Amino acid sequence: LKGAIQAELAVVYLLPESGGRLPDGTRVMLQDLASRPDLNGRGGVIRAWDYALQRYSVELEKDDAKRNSSGPQLPSNPDLLALDDVDSDDELQQETSKVELSIPKKIMVMPKNVLVDLEPPRKRLEELVRNWNAWRGRPRSVSASQDAEAVAAALGPPLESMASYLQEAASAVGTGSTCGRDGADLIEFECREALQGARNLAAKLLGETPEEPPPAPPMNEPPPALVPVAGSGCEVSQALKEAAEVAAASIELRQKKRSRSRGRRKRSRSRSRRRRRHSSSESG
Image (cartoon, rainbow, N blue to C red; front, top):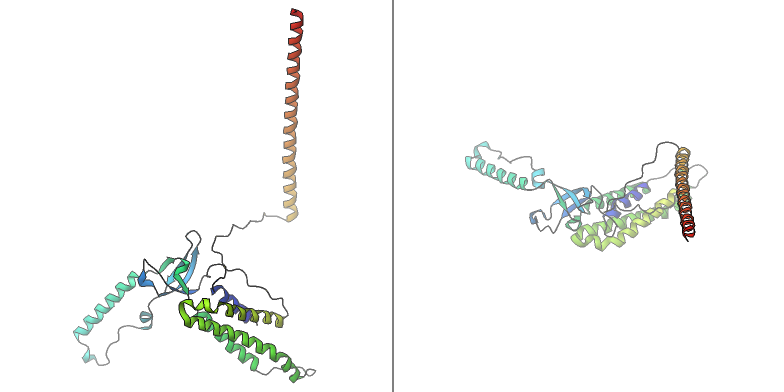
């Protein structure tokens, strides 16, 4: 049951309209590269996402032919090994080395230049279906107070429904893998519905509340997390309260000083006015 919930997390972020970017470790195929058309169709694995450039860092895979071959195939009869054969093998090996050197280990590409490879999730879902069918088909032990037929009748329908949900999801992903470029768009709704049904049923059988999958990895850099101040919450709140009180007291003191200075200015102005009036009256 936990595997059914984990299977949704492994597939749902690979579908279109997931609301984010592809997770690291996703196997993709390069497509529509104008600057390097020779790399179109080559497989790779997403290793990172550059928030500033909005591009994936894809680690390219080596050629299958180079990986599967253990070296040049020599004839079984040493007498048939001529000098021309050795030269041709050396030339072929040099040409292959030149091609490999021109292929970078990693490449930065935009989201539109990667196509999700649905083969890994298809294999995972099919393996989960086989394991589930094998598990639900085995006999189960019951206590002496329980009726084996009643237990089988109670567990049979939900276990069969779970097998149907998983099979529908595996079939949908398999269809998308076969259809190629537009496969994920064709099976998106069907696959989401099947995985959601499996998740809700698994939570019900486990006695838990169904939870929606967390959001997909974001394409924009998230804000930095706030680092909590060392110490207990009471000490932090007390320190903030004292700092606020000191700030308020300093503001109040400044206001009092300003009001006093204004009063002194007013009194000095009134005195100068009275003096002027008195001097004018005496001269008159």
